[in-house]
Amino acid sequence: MKDSDGEGTGGGVARSHPSNLPLPTPQSDPNLQFSGGTDDESSSRNSSSSATGGASPGYYSDYPSSFSGECSPYNMSPWNQTMASPWSHHNEASAAGLGGPPTMAPGTSLISSLVREEGHIYSLAAKGDTLYTGSDSKNIRVWRKQKDSGGFKSSSGLVKAIVISSERIFTGHQDGKIRVWKVSPKNGMHKRVGSLPRLRDFLRGSLNPSNYVEVRKNRSALWIRHSDAVSCLSPTDPAQGFLYSGSWDRTFKVWRISDSKCLESVVAHDDNVNSIVAAFDGLVFTGSADGTVKVWRREQQGKGTKHTAVQTLLKQEHAVNALAVSAVAPVLYCGSSDGLVNFWEGDRHLVHGGVLRGHKKAVFCLAAAGALLLSGSADNTIFVWRRDGGVHSCLSVLTGHTEPIRCIAVVEDNGENSSESNAGGAAAGGGSSSASRWIVYTGSLDKSIKVWRVTDEAPDPLFHGDGFGASGSTSSFR
Image 1 (cartoon, rainbow, N blue to C red):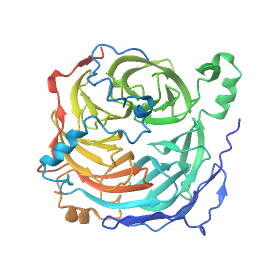
Image 2 (image 1 turned 180 degrees about the vertical axis):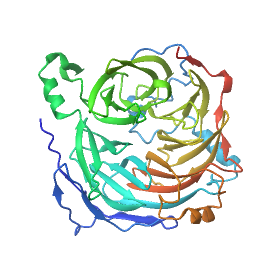
Image 3 (image 1 turned 90 degrees about the vertical axis):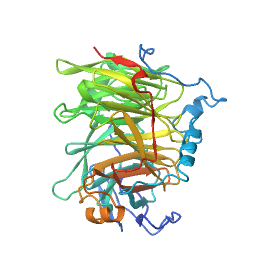
Image 4 (image 1 turned 135 degrees about the vertical axis):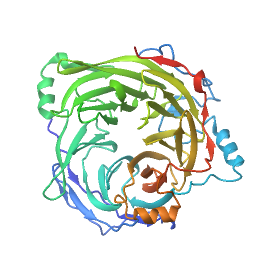
């Protein structure tokens, strides 16, 4: 039962391209070799770089039940990237109304493209000038100021989720494990300091038959360990000290970061849990391939926790792939395989605010920054939305990726987290110095990460999102 993951740096060549040059066709380098190691070490190699239950009253469901057979299990899957949104005509009409293809707002620009030939990009996490990228090569690559700074690896299948909490990096893997990493203060190398659950908890728990739960027909597993891929992670703020993990085993689990204890396991949905967000006022939101968005309230019970389902906000045919909560207001966003972004507003009373239409295919990822929301899609684009009061406007459509967008990470642009100076970026983009600016990283199945500078200022939005305002459904959490 010992965790014997091997570790090293994955093969391939890392490159970064200026934003005005096309990406070359990836080529492997047969002369490049990497040394292996233990799972408690990381290797570094620098590369050139440049700049459950039914819906409760108040859920929203306003979708046709079928679109010419497009609601088959395969087409509803988040892995299907070919299904066009039933609302795709809206995007085309919007573009036509602009007199041509959508463009980026002044002050928004592509800084560079980071390419390492080691697999499709499935996960990103950023802090300051450091970026972590996860792929199906089993590598977690580290970039500092957009330059390859080595990486670390586990023989665990693709890396589906990465989050940073205080000084620890948590990675969720295809094998159902969550691995914990820290940066060594001596040499800056990343070292694995544990996994969730801990080995001793796993061994101790396995001796008690009451710790086993049925996960599939004729198959049982320990409740403290995910029995399928870990698809999403979300930490609370450090003062609360919890980490949430969602899995394809239909559960989410609650971990206490200080001692790596699993406090609770909740069977949350009838299908894969694709997204989880620990949010305001002790609320937790989950989205699933079963087409639902659920709200859970966390309560302390002694040294543990208890989560109660208080509302089902959405129930539809199409899989829910991504959730995000606004950083400046109590607003929840939901991206799904029909290409739509639903949102709900309110503190203790969530009201369905409307739907943002624009993407032609499934929305796979969302990220919130200030008043902005970024949505990444299987149509290879990233939409930049701004919320002003109750109205959403599309400021920019970021294009350049050649395959579906799977993940987005955002950090505030402080002039130190990019290889291009802040002043230079303002001059090139024409953005106002008073506008909030962000560095946005987007990961794609085209095996590249693109780095953008995005501003929330745009004198002329491309178009406005479709909102329903006060006619939305009200959800009470009393």
